[in-house]
Amino acid sequence: MSTVIVGAGQAGAHAAIALREAGYGGRILLIGEEAERPYERPPLSKQMLTAAEAPPPAYFHREAHYTERDITLLLGTRISEIRPDAGKVITADGRSIGYEHLLLTTGGRARRLQVPGAEHVLYLRTLADARRLRKLLQPGARVVCIGAGVIGLEIASSARAHGCAVTVIEAGPSVMGRSLPSCLAAWLADLHRRHGVELKLGAGVATVAADHVLCTDGHHFAAEIVVAGIGMERNTDLAEAAALSLHAGIALDASGRTSVPRIFAAGDVAAFWVPRLQRRLRLETWRHAQEHGACVGRNIAGAGVPYDDIPWFWTDQHGVNLQIAGTTDSSAETALRGGLDGASFSVWLLDAQRRVNFVAGINAPRDVRAGQMLMRAGQAVDPARIADLSVSAQSLSRGA
Image (cartoon, rainbow, N blue to C red; front, side, top):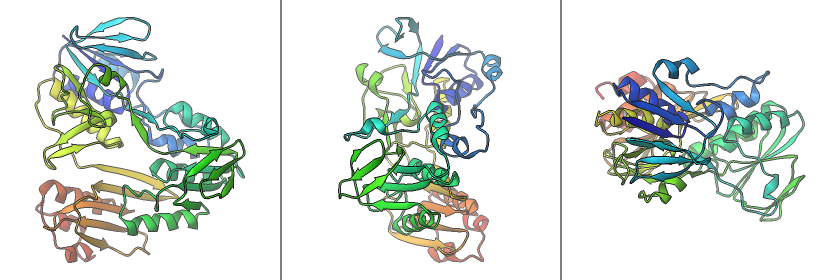
C-alpha cells in the first residue's frame, strides 16, 4: 500500500502529514522538482526581499518531522508521465514508481509575458527567483512591475522599501481588479501613490528592452529591473496526458477525486467542486493550498469529508495589512464598517438575502473573521448593524 504525492509545495506537504496523522499505514512518497524541502511562498515577495539580512527559507516542517512520520522526500525529481492503468509514475530519468493512490499537487508556474524583449523580464515564484531579485533591489534602481495583482503590488511595496523608483503597469482599469470592489481598489491605488509608486492603469506592454518598457499607448518607462506578476498557469500537463478531466484546472469532486480512479489532486492546480456554491472554484492562496491538501490527504485515508472552506488570503503592502474572505460575485449590497480615511476599516458585500458573500479588511482582522463565520453559517445580517462601530465584530458573528 503506497501513496505517491507529486508536488512538494504547501498542498503536497500538508497532504502528506494529514494522511499519516489520519492513520494511514502505507508508504508515503512526496516528490518535488526543487531541491529544497517544502517551504512557504508568501515571504518570497515580502521578508525575503525586505529583511536587512537575507532570511533562510521558511520551511513548513523540520526535516526530522517527515522522518518521524515515515514520509519519504524525493526532491530534485521531475515526474514525466503517469500510467494510470499500471498504477505508476515515471521520473524524467526513467525510474518507475508504483502507487495505490496518486495525489497531484503540482501547483502552477508564473505566466510569461509574450512581447518582444520578454527575455529581459523577471518573475517571482520560487526561492531562487526571490534570491535573484533581492540582489537587484538597490537604492535608486528603477523598477517596473507589470501587473497590479497581489504579487506585482507586493514587489512594488518591497522595492520602495529599498528606495527604488517604482512604476506599476496594469492593463486593467484598477489594481487587484479581480479581487476587490471598486472603492477598495481605488483606496489601495491611492496608498501606493502616497508611497511614491507611479501607477499606469489601462495600458498594455508593447516591448521590453534592457533599459526601458514601452507601453501600447506609447508611454515609455526607464527601468533596470522589470518584473512581471501577470498570474499563473496551472501545471496540468501530466494530468492532461493521463486523460484526466480538466476544467481550467484538474476537475475534482468535493473530496478531491479526479475523473480517473485512485488519482486525487489538491491546491492551486485544482478546479474543485464546492457544495455550498454548487459550482467549481479555482484558488491560488496560501490557506487554500494548506487546507485543501490536508483535507484530500485525510480523504485518501478514508475520511470522506467534502472540502468547503471559505476563500481567504492576506497581503501586506506599505505596512498595511489587507485580508480578504469570500467571493465578490452575486453581491447586491455594500456595507462599510469604519471610514475609508481611517487606519482600520472593512468593506462587506451582501447578496439579495443579505447574506455575507465577501469581506475585506484594512488592518481589521477581527472584522474578516466575523465575516467568515457569517459566510459559513449562511446567516443574514443587517448592513446597518455592520456599519455600527458600537457593535463589536464578535457581536456581529454571535450565533453564526
